[in-house]
Length: 308
Image 1 (cartoon, rainbow, N blue to C red):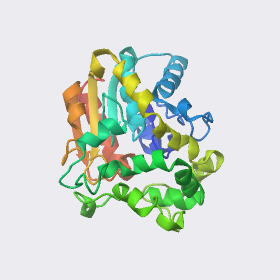
Image 2: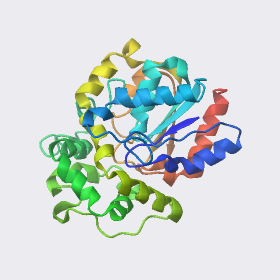
Image 3: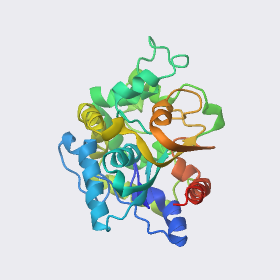
């Protein structure tokens, strides 16, 4: 099983899942992705196009023996495992998307914005809906990086907060980034909040902070700067990106960014995954950390049902 983290993470995001499935007898790998932690961090934004990141995974998989694997991706790790499954299906036994569903046409603003719930986000007030933060990265990239880098421990503590039922169906904070002049508004740095121990044990949070002190946020945020290349890469996939392998999506009920139960965000995945299972969990966007035991149970149940 190969576990791919997203923004802003390192492989340690998957500690609970890796330890449990390894004890079940699986060989588990959770790399730091390109631009994060101990991985390489090229300077040019084009180095973070999806094609390049997928090639990293191809080379890693070859190094591990290239036997078909179960690939699990969270957040921006999900587009990586989706593209790998579409372009290199022989490497896949099954695919698990966590929090971010599969977008065969690419995880890119031109794909995402047409799926916005216009009842919740009227186009005249919220043209990009919950993806406003994504647009802000494109228009204010240097400011965004500087704001995140200003106080790395505070930034990571502010980003990693548990979801709550009260947020379901409400405007999500990511829709207000442009209006507020950045994630942290005029302060241009994160507020001083304590890390959420329910998500990150202290030692692991310290390791996360150390990783970002090494790289800063520029490499990880550069993943968002490649829409044109990523759209072209998705367009080149066989069968318009249809997936024939067993697919599991773990949905967060309180995830204001990607919950698929109250909008159309999941429609492309439903249309292009032949063998799709969906499990919803009481979680915000950081599902692998918020629902450690529950996510393990859901994946294990799916693996057993699909005889993987």
